[in-house]
Image (cartoon, rainbow over all chains, first blue to last red; front, top):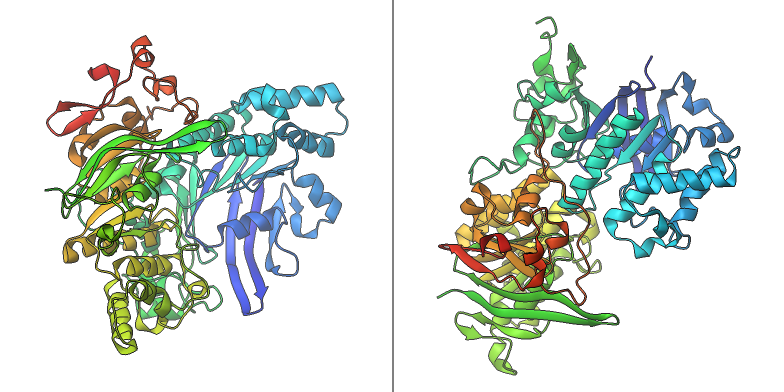
Length: 324
Length: 314
């Protein structure tokens, strides 16, 4: 059974200007020990999905309209506040994008780590808790003596590592990392990715890595889900997607946008146009207005998810190819 | 003669705990129609260097020459013309535009300040011309920045930089705040403009894929100093400085590989306040020996047109 299963999820944001359709029938599941990369542009709904799973959507604004989220056999949407709190932080934890904003500036970092244990592991003695905190600092490569310092005394990369330590101290079964390295430099990014790979192997926890960088996914993950306009449009193992034999036109476009270190092409080939406005979505395939292969059918009918083995693509071009 | 040259340029900031060496002894040369890529981690002084060249910050030592003339050392009107010739594209398209001005006013602003255009009609025409040049549709002329997405906002920033017909533009991480698909559009635009207008760029970034795509020459900076300065082809074929090597191997590439043997640097950039003599990269360098920290490591020419500051090549 899957650890987490998201089925046909629709999430709307009700704003003053109208209803924004952030997720539109998103299907997604993750097994124990798997590491899935969620790739997509700004506004594709990656973060909304993460917030829906952890029930952190902004109150009164974000609304789950339809669908189900089942975690380890329990319906997340039917949980009461206490049950959600027990799940969040203990079983599912999250690393946030901006290490500068996700820590409390008025508390020492050691205190902030201890807070997690105080909430979720009340049975441990003080000494045991402190030991765990020290151990965690060492694991992410920060001297334990520095735990009495405040966030501003650390650099960006170190703050992110503290964020990771905080997410991991409860040994979660599922870790959701929302663009954990976007705010960091390449060399620090390499350190963090290295750390995450090591943790994945050590803790055997499942991980959802949200990013817009296809290069990071191939480094850490075993599977990829490409998200566009609140839908998964391509799903497969790293090999399926990165072999670049069969790809959704959008994924193909994403690959082409990245300047290649090996070729000397003078011009890049960007995906034309802009992402459809989530407040005013097109009827058929959401990508049809930017797609080079579109036909009239794409504009009025929504394609299904066509699967070949482990690889699924939501595009009419792959209709009927499943048997091959 | 090179369009822009700097000569042992230094910029130190006074802080409570000592002198912060933001830019330390940088000598560079940018020819007409050339793009110099400046690469390095945050805090290595690349933005400060750009600002000093544009005269937004006074240099502590050394000078900047434009077309052979020293521009920021003498006071008075002499340097006035330079403001029209040099411009900047900023990193964050969300904070570099005044939210209270319409797109028309934003693009017109530099021309009003420099008194380039006489009447309103001419101004409108000029603004529309610029919008067309950067690929913004005419219907946005009365829109406000918050109505545009990142890519279009960055186009407004570029139109502003082009308004005075400059010859040299400092691009300070112009695409790092954008999505990959939009990033490609903006990079294409920046390169097309270079061909059309014969611009020279100093392109500041930490993204090596981008720098490879756009530059003629590349300068790698570490803690205010130039550690490697060479042509693009030479750098991507073989990196001489250990830091350049680590930087290149840290790029996440979207392709399948069997094994990864990338170099993960230990530690972080050390403190640029009152740095110790010797190689500043030494604490993180796997080749470091006593030689590295016992003496200053000069930037020396190891091959024609290729400079490296590393004890390995002394």
